[in-house]
Image (cartoon, rainbow, N blue to C red):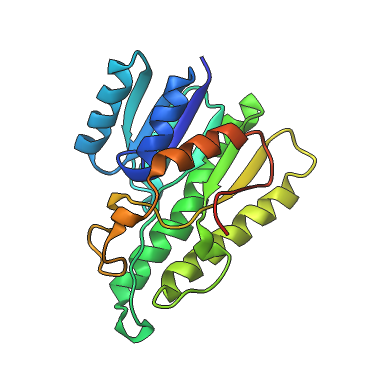
Length: 219
């Protein structure tokens, strides 16, 4: 049975991706910080006849990331999905806001790729990095979020060149805002109900997950 590990798998796009890959015969490693949310997704998958394991992982913490990936024996696909967004005028960001955003979105992406890499090399597998359109252009009141996503874009594109002659691949995935819990603690989007749900985004990602350099949902 092929395997996929997904960070931020307890809600939103991570959950939708977990359900999509599970329905298509993948064993899912559900990584995240909140055990209760992960257990709910695991139950959804198992109730549908799928296979899933819950692995607690805080992508900001090197030890947590290392221990999480040590619990995975074989891995065909790693989806680097965990991320946070804090929004507002640049003068309003606190040091904690900046650290939390950069540690999760940039440091977390780097640490998880480092830990997943030996498993991906062993299977000649694939990595997908969920970036968002905030990695393509600047946006009002999203300066720190965009900065983090531009960094992840650069990281991903650099690895594409670094691994150009290898049998592994890394894909950058770009999409706009979705109707997910991402916005729950933010006033940046007043009503997320008008945004598309994560399910069609997960469907397109699955359909186009073939090692290409980019999957563009939105520009």
